[in-house]
Amino acid sequence: MNTTTSRFTVALSLALASVTASAADGDLDPAFGMGGIALAGITDATGGVSACRPVVQPDGKILLCGTRASGTTADFFVARFTADGALDTSFSFDGRTTIDFSGSGGIDVAMALALQADGKIVVAGTTNADGGATHDDFAVARLNADGTLDTTFGAGTGKKVIAFDLAGGSGNDDLASVAIQGDGRIVLAGTVATSNHGTDIGVARLLSDGTPDASFNLAGKLGFGFDLPGSTSMNDAATRVAIDHQGRIVVAGAADKGNDSEGSDFAVARVRPNGTLDPDFDADGRATIAFDLGFDKADAVFGLAIGPDDSLVLSGNVEVSPSLPTNQDVGVVKLLPDGSPDANFGIGGRTVVTYDEIPGGLDYGLDVGLRADGRILVAGAAQYAGDGSLHATLFRLEPDGDLDASFGMIGRRSYDFEHTLPSSQAFLGLALAGDFILASGIVIVDTGANSIDVFVARMTDDTIFANGFDAP
Image (tube, rainbow, N blue to C red; front, side):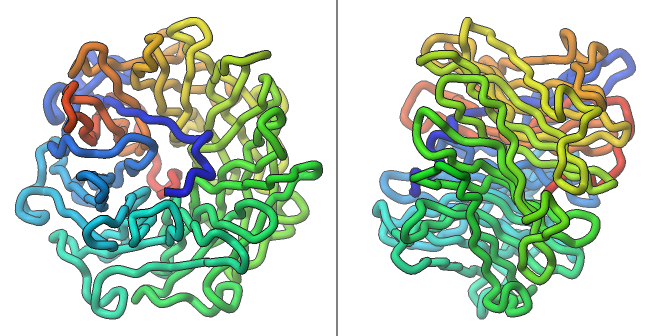
């Protein structure tokens, strides 16, 4: 697939928990799955950040998606679990279904899913029909509640492919995230190739039947770049999309600063419902946040949450080493609704959290959730061994950006599933559900060829959350 965002991606996995009278916040819930963890049971998942954040249905059932691979072929898959962490046999007979866009030899990578108000399931990612290194397109499928393809979508197929194919570009258009508007329209965001300035952010909007929405930038698609001054390669990337309370589209990712020694900044843009950049957001609809703490300054957003006042919280990776090799920590940013940094959060709207389970280790902040009390949860992973093995991680911040000392060890927790030795797992997605935290990701379950599974875990969080603060 497109390697444009390769320096912003990692191979990962994770764990999560529940509540008893004596449980501490962040403890795995022994009443969920097996000791708080529920595996999809596929063992042929791909690595990288191609496992979706969990989505909780109104009946408590849990959806997640990922990518399973065999040889040169890869396909989407979706799994559904019951509220107590068992695979739901009312969904495609065994709780799992596979979606193929490209046939034998093609590569389809699922990145995100969302639940419609009518219970239908939208799963989105990237397809590469020829199995080669060129011409990736956005791909989206819609399932009925029982796991079958919805033939009212995509001209009877249940599937839709969207190509940006900007003039002169390579044709590589890689989807990263999906969101559903209140009116049922489907919003897709990702990274699209251009002719003369690397990659841009691509946003597409579909009507409920899968056809392009002509009321969105006339053609149903919008491409734009950050194009920072001095940047020559200008490879901007999108990682998350969400809809705010005014119906505006928020896209987050990374803005390229030009070369390896200059790296990238956190980047976020806001788009009006008609498909134009919102001038009320940082004057031109685009804002960047520079940490600039390390040698190559490679900073990128992976998590996005929207507060009830349309403020934004971003989590991601921040390079902090003064020289090579890289040392990476987790960065968290809070912006006011107008795109300016929140001066009451951290230092200038930014804070950095480190695990460093080994000296100079790589720490990842891959998703973020907002509690109703304003505290912030960030899920990810931390390197704990020289071979790159990972522990899943979760930390909690106070509304002002300080670590919450009432959570774990001075605000931080890490998790080891111990499926292999050395073990490796990471949290890729996060959802807040009542007095629980749900996390999804990938875990190495065997040392053999078929070794990676996708999971969802449940952990305790005893404050009741308000619904609707998390991006889909």
